[in-house]
Structure formats: C-alpha cells, structure tokens
Amino acid sequence: MTKISDPHVRIKAATPDETSARLLFDFKKAALRGDPTALYQAIILCGENQLSMPDWLTDHLLKLIANYHLGKKPSWKGAGKRPLIVIRRRFENEVRRRAVIAVRAWVKDKRKYQAMPTACIRAWNRQDYLHKDFSSDEDALGFASLGLQDIKLQADGPILKCSTRTLRRAMADKKGAHLPKMSGRIASVFGLTDPDTLFGYDKPLKPNLK
Image (cartoon, rainbow, N blue to C red; front, side):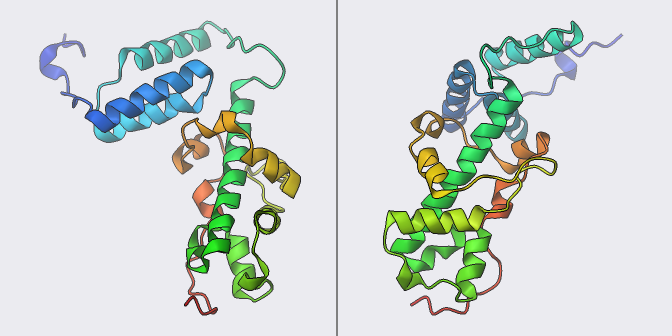
C-alpha cells in the first residue's frame, strides 16, 4: 500500500526565497501576538508559491484540528477576545484607516482619486463636493466618513460606524498597524466584504485632473 509519506509520491515543495521567508517570519510573530488572520495569510502564501509549510504553521494547524475534533475551544481570556471578533475588528479598522489615508492623498493631489472609497469618487464626479473645498486632515476625515457611511462589511452584520471621531481613533490605533493586511480572499472565508470592492471606480471622471 502506497503511503503519502513515501518519498516517491511526495510533491517537491519549493524553498522560500528571501521575501517569502521574511513574510512567514512576520506571520509567525503576528500569530504569537494573537492575530488569527496571520495563519490564513501564511497558508495562502505557501499554497500560491508551492512552499512547504514551516513547522510552526504545521504544528499550529494540527493543534487547531485536534482541538476541534476533541471538542475543545480556544482559550481566549477577556471579553471580546474570541478569534472571530478579533478578525472583524481588525478588518473594520483596516477599512477605516485605508479610507482616511486614501482621501488624505487625494486632498494633496486630486489625481490620486482612484484609491478613495467608491462613494467619495462618485460624489466628487457628480460635483456634489469640489476638490478645492478640501485642504486639511479634518476635511479628509469628514469626507472619508461620508464615503463609508451605510456600509455593511458582512451581509448579516451591522452597518459600519464611521464618524470622524471613530476614524480618528482608528488612525491612532498603532497596535493594529503592524498586523498583516487582510486580503479579499481572507475576508471571504469569514463572510466579510472584499475590502477592494469598497474602493475605486472604473468609470472615467468628468472633473479636469490637470
């Protein structure tokens, strides 16, 4: 009987290059800090590049699967520390920060409109808001808030709260800034919106960009 462990049936995995090795190391540190998305980022990286999974990732996955079959739950101490809640909060803050950063860049140079929230781009295209009316970070916070209002990041979830106060707090959240970015593929695993669908607009704008 042929076993998967037999050398002749194994698929040779590539050795991580310098960039991949550094990313895997960053994901390991993030996972140890308690960021559950780091595991999924590492799995996708290995899968897309046909890399062998490092021992820390294999051990972590084996432990998760074993605990699932044994009926054990992860021991996350404190309120609001369950893995799914951590992921959702991380995702919400990332969307908020991305919106503010994009609008800030647009305020400085209107040719950089393509990274803004789609609602902001459409409002500017309709001339509801003029570029010359924006000149400060406070203006950027207000416009970013407008662009994200009434958005649901998950089909059955609440509307994302995006007041300027909330956005200012998200920008000041240094703890989340060093965590791996959540991709659309990771988001879809948890029933969340692909963050890229909230930003950009594929129709040409009417305003003169010169």
